[in-house]
Image (cartoon, rainbow, N blue to C red; front, side, top):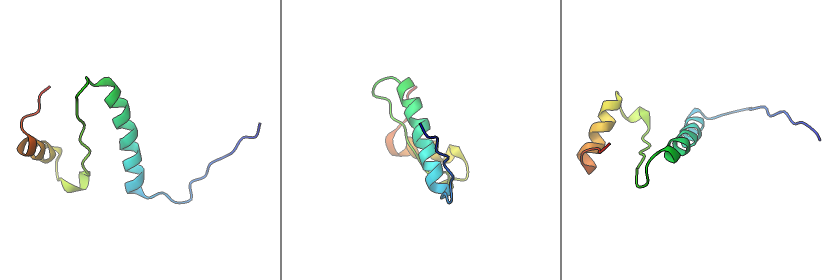
Amino acid sequence: KELYTVETIFEDPEVAEYLRSQRIQSIVQTALMPGAVIFSLPSRLFEHQSEAFKLVIDQIGPVVG
């Protein structure tokens, strides 16, 4: 059986971050109760994570849990 070495020539930072967040989301999702929702928002849209929390609360209501 041959072993292959993978060498990354170019990697878009945004795509890499998106793929990483998808893997993390998958792991976290399995630990959550049924019916739970996970939001994925680009960090560049907010100066601080509290702004994202406020946006979610303003748009859909208080977070439960």
